[in-house]
Amino acid sequence: MDVVRHPNNQGWIEVIVGSMFSGKSEELIRRLRRAQIARQKVQIFKPQVDVRYSTAHIVSHSEMRIESVPVKTSRELLERVEKNTEVVGIDEGQFFDAELPAVCNELADQGKRVIVAGLDKDYLAKPFEPMPQLLAIAEYITKTLAICMVCGNPANHTQRLVAVDDRVLVGAEGTYEARCRRCFDPHLSETPNTPTPNSHIAAKRR
Image (cartoon, rainbow, N blue to C red; front, side, top):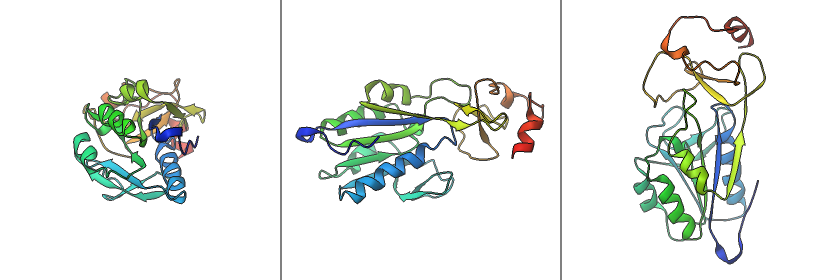
């Protein structure tokens, strides 16, 4: 989906959601690069907590990357957006505070195209705030699917593989993997070293 401009400089919000390894950041980067090719003024942000691959770039699991500015809060993000900016990109929206939807609304009201990517569900398959609120106010929504690492079917869940109860645990391969509805086990992280159904199949597929 590539909506480049609306009439009368009207702004809008696009949200890209899905599980980990489903291509959310890759799709975000693709849209932002197209905006840059169109010679639009683009600013890109990420949460400061996300330092998995780079502190100053958004990096997809397929190693696509684009320069970004790390920020601590949604309010800081808003303050850094310049008046003549046309497109605002935001990655890992689930790591921002509850003010993010209001900030995105304010930017869209200013006539800016706002594109946010993030997880819609946490490792327990519960809605991951503030993404549900963003989904409710967005004009355009894209749902991406990964491939289940157990059975190979389309995956919509993020399986945590380590025994940590904290809701926010920044990690990638080895910490999480994509699972379909049938293979997802929300209790796996509570019982370390306990085999899960079809776990031997998952090991062979890696």
